[in-house]
Length: 166
Image (cartoon, rainbow, N blue to C red; front, side):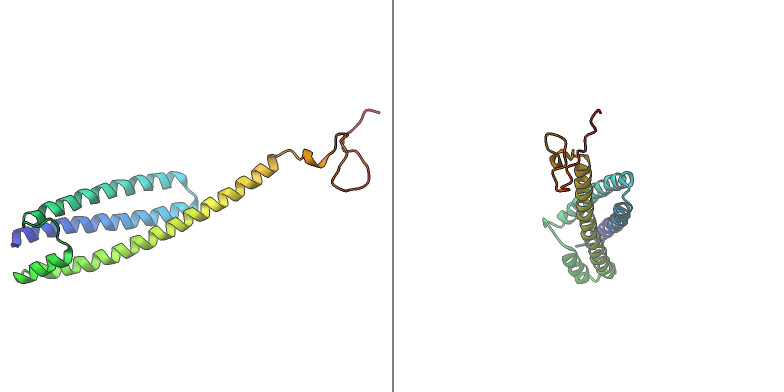
């Protein structure tokens, strides 16, 4: 491994970290949109998350292309650190910092995603309860009356609930 390839990897890792940081911010925005029940913000945030994901896929492909210049198909960050240390590169420490940063942002994104999933589940539960209430309110209550319009649910008074002409 040479310094030029390490330099290219450093640039790509900076971009990857920026994209993951943006992703974490977007998941935070999504959480707020779910809490405030703002569907417009939620859709916009989801669209931005998909764009950022696409960017991350492209950046990962770029990382793989650079690594393949070394004659290997795949190399994770720990292996890159080992290779940088073998040639006493000053970038070895930078890659160690990237590893720590990636772990931190990954944990943050995972926690936010789990929180968002739980908020969505709660929202669905609440929506189902509201729908049940609406359906019950809109359902005709004809089952409590007999064919003569008398209340059959036990008032026992025999009073008709239908007004008759006198």
